[in-house]
Length: 261
Image (tube, rainbow, N blue to C red):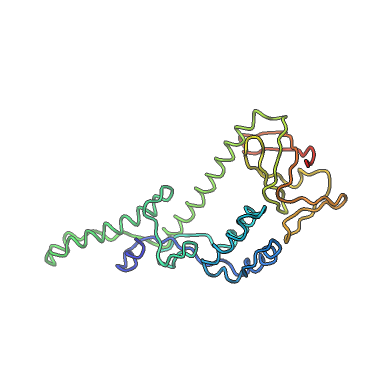
């Protein structure tokens, strides 16, 4: 569809995804080397190299966290009135056509195609008839493209907030009870954990760990306790207790009870 729009210079929105930030990729190099990923980050200026890296981290305990770090280096996909290609899909031309969550950009593509089809149907008519029946050209502006990009971010944020709301509403009945939390990712601000037995993901702020003062190592993606030298990493488990659940604010507050073997 996008190739067709470019070829015929149709007024449509293009889904543009630019190359990843080389500065961010360079910063990640040491982290990935630490976990045995041998592909130079500079090669990730080529879409094919991403699959190579994903294959290397597939079996690692930190798979999810490394994937997130890698994806954060990539540019956000946005809408533009000019085609610049889609890096993530390795596509020279790209536009939505039947995306269920991007209806208005789809509509712009539909209008462009209908406009072109209408023009084709007028080819056999004389100039006066063509001028009279010529359909109006759909208007697609940079401002419209920017608005569609912004609205998509709002929709994504609303989706995440609705998921958090459902999690809090479900866990509200378990206030005062304990859970086993398995660490899925470690960051300077805290831990992303999976709460058993319900399999719900949540983020525990670093302040939840009150048994020590922890510092974050950006290369090993671990936390280290200053006094007891406990190393906190992906796969570690701890017992937590749910203290509060606020449905209106979509927040959960836990306390760390003890580390588990």
